[in-house]
Length: 161
Image (cartoon, rainbow, N blue to C red; front, side, top):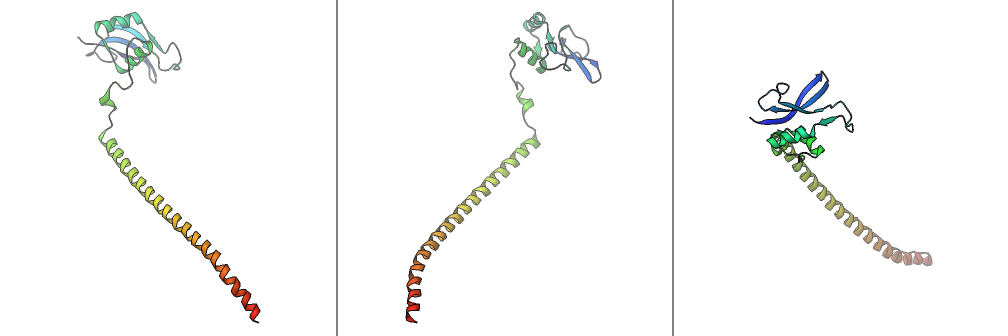
């Protein structure tokens, strides 16, 4: 007989209250259980001491006998220091589905295309800036050279008259 430490739901509709019980894995969720080892009231604030109550001796006894906690109860036991619980112990449950994988691939492709377009735009902007700088330099050189040549011609014209 395999035993689990799990939650059994009680309370009214939309007002849940759970008992933490040691139960046979074949028994229904709210059905027969072997022993009650604690309680959980999700309606209380998270920092309340009465939110999760555990009978530590009973829990340790059941863990020594080989009972395995469910994910939620393991989280409670980890907070109490009775069980080593790590976030994400179920790697299969956390894997994305087929559609999510397709969306991830589409996002990667779009991001790569966007990055390539941005790189091309940066290159084009850099080339345009280089061309504009060179044109400005050329215009500056022409401006330096042009007034020097035009000035004597302008001076000669009034002298000739």
